[in-house]
Structures are given as C-alpha cells and as structure tokens.
Image 1 (cartoon, rainbow, N blue to C red):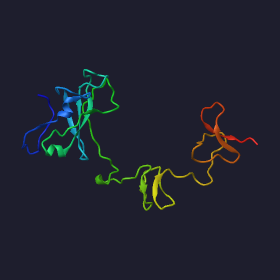
Image 2: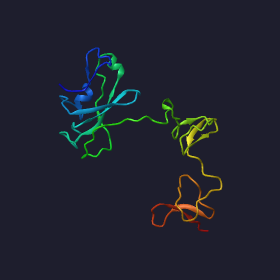
Image 3: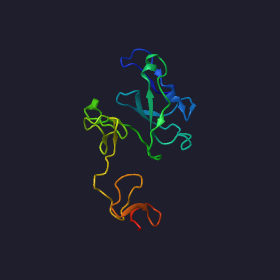
Image 4: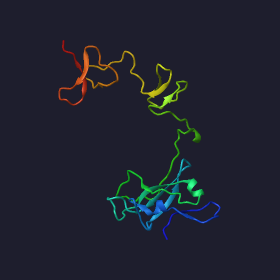
Length: 198
C-alpha cells in the first residue's frame, strides 16, 4: 500500500492516508507508490508542514522520477479532526541541484519572531507608528501629513550630493552636486552626474 499516513499521538483511531500529498504528482492522481523518506515536521504555524525526500516524478525534468529531492506537504488540522484527508499535493523545494541526492530537510525558527525570543521588525512599506525602532534595518518610519507612518528607506542626508562623473538615479536618491545633472552616459549605459551646458 502507498505510504504516508498520520495517526493520533496516543495511537488511538485509524491512520488517515495523506492521499493528496502522496498520490497527486504533476497534477495527476497516481497509485502513490513513490519512495518517500525521512519526514521532518516544521515548527507549528498556520498549517502543519512536513518536509521529506522522494524520487517521485518532477515535471518535464524527471517525468519518471530521478534523484532524491526534498519535497514539502501541508497538513490541515481541521480536516484531520473531521477524519478527512488533511493533505495538499506536495511540491518540490526550489534551488536543489538536479543531480544531487538530498536526504534530510531541517527547519529553523525565525529568530526575529518574539514568540521565539527575538524581536520582530516591520518590512518595507509596512504601516508604522514612529514610537519605537520598529522598521527593519535600512528603513525608518516616515510620518506623512495625515499622521500615519510607513517604513521607507531614509531620505538622503541634507547637503549630501553626488560628485561629477559618479552614477546617479533619475527617479530618486541624492541629487547631483551643483553644476551637474543626472543624465545618460555617453555610451547610453547608465546614468551619471554630468556637467551642465550653459
């Protein structure tokens, strides 16, 4: 029989097969007879995530199966509680060498998450209050005219300018120093602070 089942920790109840995760491959329902090994559960989150290795087919790259690759499947606890197949089709984890046999996945916690003892920060474009250092490194809380803030890159320092001949950005950033403008270079490849013509 195909592998991949979940059962209550106390061993009670019948095991429930993870049909979607085990049998759906390349969008097609199969018999589920794929080599799946070394499941590793992720820290708790919105779903329960399990990484495992498998030699199952992978798109047009390995239509008949290939080397062992790391795959991930999600488990929905609500469906599991209802006695339904709680799984979703598995997906191959990106950026793996196609000729390497990958065996064991490891999960890590986000050390910035306060739940795990870290301090979180707000990413670029997030609303912010400006009352604490809340925006991630390289951004700051910029308060607008209506009193609401957004995490944005800091504005250029007052008095700072880009010297003649250095690269510049026509859409923002520091201005070119007096006597020069940000313009396309003579070869057409990039923008530089160039002298103005009177």
